Length: 451
Image (cartoon, rainbow, N blue to C red):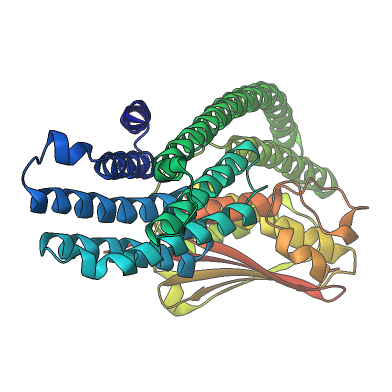
C-alpha cells in the first residue's frame, strides 16, 4: 500500500490535480489505521505510552475519514454534478476534523460511535454513487465503483467485528486493511486509465489544433493570392481605363462647343469609366477585409465627413432608386476614431443592398440618416424593398448568408458580414430590422471618440 501511496504522489507531481493528493492522503490514513489496529504502533512507536498510541489511532482514523470524504467527492466530481452531495461529503470531512479534536482531548471513545456510524454511512453512499455513475466514463467509472464496493464491504465487516458478533472468522480482523488495499489498487487503476484517456484526448486536441492552424494558414494564403490577383487585375484595368479616359478627354477637346450631343456622350463615357474604377476599388477593398487578420487604422474624423463621402460614392457607383441623405445637426460634428475607408465601405455595402432589393419593388427612395445617440452616433439605412424573412434575420450577419427570398438576385452574402465586422472593429455594432415585402432598416452604431 505504501507503493500505491508513492504512486499517487508521483501522479500529483506530474499532474497537479487535487484528487491525486487526496487519494494519497486517504491511502496513508488507511495504512496507519491498519498498522495501529495490528498493534504495530504500540510495539514500535509508543511502547509503554498508551495515551500516545490512542492519540495516534484516533488522529489517523479521523484524518482518514476527512481525506477519504474529500477524495471521493473529487473523484466523483460532485462539485459540478450535485452541490448538495458535495456538501454532504464536506460534512463527512468536517466530522473527521471534529473527531481529531476529540482525539487530542483524549475523548476518542466518546466520539467513536458517531465516527463509526458516519464511516459506514459514507461507505454506503460511495457504493450507491459508484453504481449510479457506473457507465458514465467506461472503465474509469467501473473501476471506481468496484473500489467503493470493496471499501463498503470492508467497513461493514469491520463494524460487525467491533460490535462483537460471534462466529466472525479470523480473517475479518484484516477486512479493513485488505479492503483499503483493494480500493487503492482499483482507484489507482481508474486514475491510470483516466490519465491515458486524458493524454489521448490531449493528443487529439493538439492534432485538431494543428489541422485548424494549417487550414487557417491555407485560407490566409488563398486570401492573399486572391487579393494579389485582384490587385494585378485592378491595376491592369485601371491602366486601360485611364487610356480610355485620356482618349475621351482628347476627343472632347476637339469637339466644337456647339456639339452638345457628342459632349453628352463623352460625359456618359467619363461617368462609366469612373463607375468602373469605383467598382474595382470597392471589390479590392472587400477582398482585403474578408481575411481574419484585418485591422482598422483609426484616426480622428467627423461623422458628417464619413457619411457624406459614402453618400457621394454611392451616387457614383449605384444606379436605381434615389438615396436621400439626412444629417441631424447635433450629430454632424461628433468626432469618431475611425478608419474612414472601412466605414465608407460599410455604408456603401448597406446602400448597395438597399438599392438592389428596393429596385425589385419599384423606385422608392432609400433613406440614409446620421443621428446622435447617448454615447456616439447611429448611421441608418432604410429601404422599402422585398425585406428579409423573419426566420433569416438571426443569420444575416454571417458570412455568405442571404435571405431565402433573394436567391434569384445577384449577390454573395458578403455585404452585411463585412458591415458587422467593420462595426465591431470600431467598437460599435450593426443591427437589422425587417419585414418581408415591406422593407429593411440597417443601423450601424459607433461610439464617439474620447476627448
